[in-house]
Length: 362
Ligand code: SF4
Image (cartoon, rainbow, N blue to C red; front, side, top):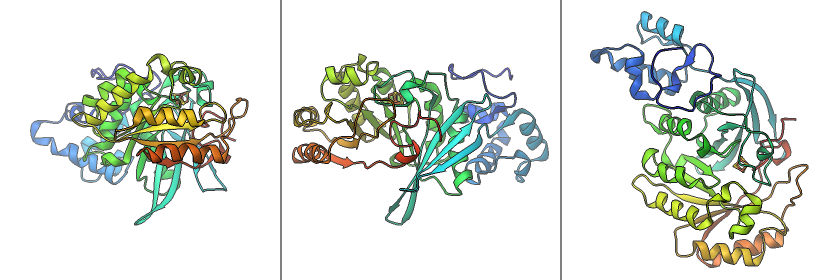
C-alpha cells in the first residue's frame, strides 16, 4: 500500500496489491508519479495512452521514458476487472456483460445498441455497488444483500471492459445498473470527473446519466461538486404513501423534497437535464388518478418523464401494466405539457431490463 493520502474515504479494501492509478484524481497524478514541474507534460502523454488509445499496458506507452514506464508498471495497474461471461438478447441484441472483480464479486453491465442519426450508437448501463441496500420492492438488485461499493477503477473498468468485450465504442453511459449510485457518492464523483474530463474519457454532458432513487443530500451536493450531466430521478409514485410501499428507504425523503432537490440541480451552476423515471406496475401506480397526480407535481416545469412498463422479476408479486393503462397514463402527461418517453424493455429476456440486473446471469 502506498503512503499517499487518498481523497475518498469509501474505498473497498479489496483493491489488488498493485493499485489502479485510476483510483486517484487527475490533479494528484504528477505527485504520484514523482514528476517535477518541467515534466508535468508526461501526465498528458500518459492520459493520451490510457483514455484515447485505450492501452492498458504501461510497457507499450512508447512516448514515455523507459524508467517511468517501469516504475508505473511496478506500482500500478489499469485494469481491475476480468471479463467473465456474456449473454446476448435474441430479441434486441442487448448484451449483458458479467465482470469479475479481484475479490471474486460479480459485476454486471449491459450494453444497449440503437440506431440514431449518424449510425448505430451504443450505451452502457453501469453498476456502482455489489447488491443494493435500498430494497425497492419491485427490483431484483434490491433483494440482494448489499455487499460493498465499487471502487473508482471498478466503475471506470466497466467502460474499458465493455469496449474490449464488444469491440464497440461506448457512446453514452447510464448509471442505472446494480446499486444506488449516490450511495457510493465519493467514488461516483471521482469516476464522473474522469469520464467527463477532456483529458479523460471526454464524454459530453448529454452522454452521461446518473440515476438515483432520490437521495436528497447527495443530489444537492451534486449541484456544486460534480460535472454537468443528466440526472434521472426515480419517482415511481405520485404520492408518498405509494412511494413508501415501493421504495421504503428512499421514501425517507418526501416527494416534495426530492422534487425541490431535482429543480435545484436543474437550475444550479453546472446543472443538466433532469428526467423522472416511473416504472408502471399493474394496479399499483398506473391509474388515471396517479397520472393526474404526477402531472400536477410536474406541471409548469421543464420536466421529462421516462415511463417504463414493468419487467417482471421471478418471485416478486408485481405485473406488467395493461397496454391501455400505459397509453392512458402517457396521454394524461402529454396533454399537460410534460415530455414523455415510453421506454420499451431491452434485454428483459436475459435479466438485463430495468430492475432485473440483480438476477443471476443465466
Ligand atoms: S431500484 Fe435501484 S436503488 Fe432501488 S433497490 Fe434497485 S438498484 Fe437499489
